[in-house]
Image (cartoon, rainbow, N blue to C red; front, side):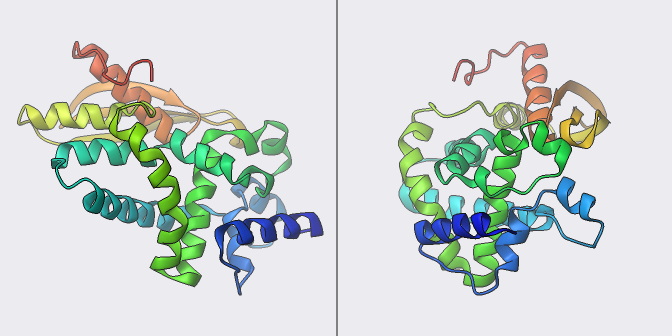
Length: 240
């Protein structure tokens, strides 16, 4: 990484109130797979950190809501949590921190505007959270996330954040006493820097809907939305 990148990392560390002893952690957190693959030297991308960060974020958010919203039942807490950790919300958090300026992309992904894409911004937010958690521990990670959750909670409680068709479909299935639903990636097309995923959503062996998106999460949302439409349900999230 060059001096400009290091300077931007220092600004981010200052904003977060935490300085990494091991700079390889934030370096990996902002390295996209397209760049790692181009280097062909065994460099790691942020994907494993993102996996960990997703779990840490879910726990911190669940704990935060459990402590804050004493009178809300489980179903409402689940819906609020989903809107707080969905791709579009996380990408908004990432933009507030200017994380896009730190993402290292392969040539094709960079030319395609990857640093501005919601899916990548959400991924690096989770990856950076995991880097904080890995070195600093749970409390450091929690201090990083809580201000974002605090600021977004009123809108989330009012249902004014972003659409979450997966949660709406899950609640509908649970309310009718049916079995759990599941999602399956059935196709990928296009170059790595501009890949489109196709996902199907099932209830047992029954296909409920199919959707496409530039990330698996967006494709799942599109599939859930189609399932709601086919079931004759007008989404409460429509228009948010």
